[in-house]
Amino acid sequence: MLAPLQALIFDVDGTLAETEELHRAAFNQTFPAFPETADWHWSQDLYAGLLATTGGKERIAAFWRRQVLELPDSARIAVIHAAKTRAYEALVSGGALRLRPGIDGLIADAEAQGCRLAIASTTSFANIEALCQACFQLPARRIFPIIATGDEVTAKKPAPDIYRLALTRLGLAPQHCLAIEDSANGLRAAKAAGLRCVVTPSLYSAHDDFTLADLVLDDLSAGSGLREILQRLNDQAGFAMKQ
Ligand code: XBP
Ligand code: MG
Image (cartoon, rainbow, N blue to C red):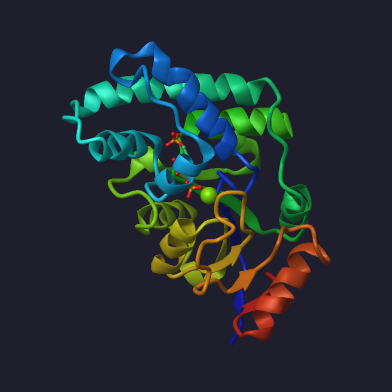
């Protein structure tokens, strides 16, 4: 028995757009404003390793620990991270991001075929809103009526919590949904929530292990969009378009 597809659940960072260089720039713009982080600078090489920790606040704390510095209380990290979010929003609003190839087409396909759209992202709602305003010229909820974010759950990716929250808000079982991800942490989160997952590797995740993925595509623009993706998944058994 085929499970009709009822919703696509998108990751944001690295999946909708190549955002991590902008996140890195926002962190580096922010650090000099705070005495504790004034001499911090995250190079690409350093950031590639730091991405193993999902979530900006958690990433700052991980770097703090790595330097064997006494960790400040979480409120102080939240203040630094709030400044980073403001810096990131300004960069995004300035037009520094483009949607990855195929995202527009996949969203149009889903809408045309009655498939609902959702987001499950580690980043904050403010950042998702800024990206949608800049890249779609629309509020995030106009495109993705269901949005689950990192600050709404206790455990971020690779834990399944963000995907479970999205599924609860959709009111759907995982077999009726498909996750679109770019990283091993995101893939693990989606699989742990019981979802099928298509992976489009991004700048920083190109060398991740995607063994668990149901399908890996260079980007989402190849072929004939959602129908072809579902056909390829279906060849491995289990999905059909919503009737
Ligand atoms: C993205 C992240 C985020 C961003 C920064 O992971 O880990 O932390 O790097 O965002 P995913 P914030 O794409 O798997 O959701 O600073 O807002 O946390
Ligand atoms: Mg991602």
